[in-house]
Amino acid sequence: MISVVVPCYNEEENVEDVYRNITDHVKKIKKNYEIVLVDDGSTDTTDEKLSKIKKSDGHVAVVRHQKTMGFGKAVETGIRNSSGDVIITMDADSTHDASLIPKMVDLVESGYDVVIGSRYVK
Image 1 (cartoon, one colour):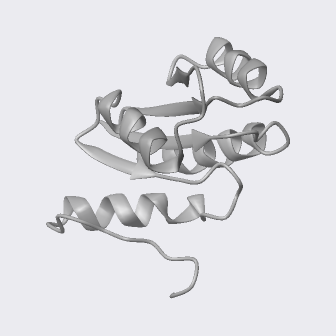
Image 2 (cartoon, helix red, strand yellow):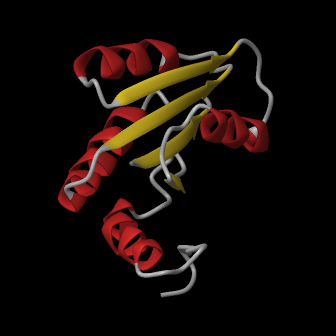
Image 3 (tube, helix red, strand yellow):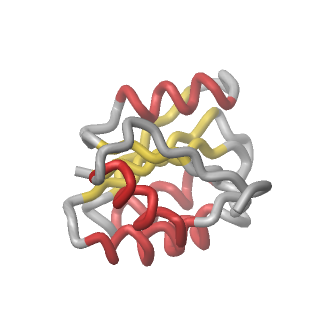
């Protein structure tokens, strides 16, 4: 299984597009997957949008922090709540390219232990 972990903090304007983009690319892999959306104590409508996404897609899990604990803790929470043997972390602000997900999974399945995607290096 592939798990995509997405920490979210006040991402009401981005989270639906990020979810759709991730879903479009992870489906291309043709393997079981989950998307773990972690709300890190958002104070906007991110929580409502995450609930709507979860309700519409059985591949989505939502985990909530009652208060903001920071990016690192949100990533940790997402990983702890993931079932995948391949775990990918993505930002909720569209700064990570979801189109790289299939290539990254291919590299892991070909023997790499860790694959790092960068927005700065091709």
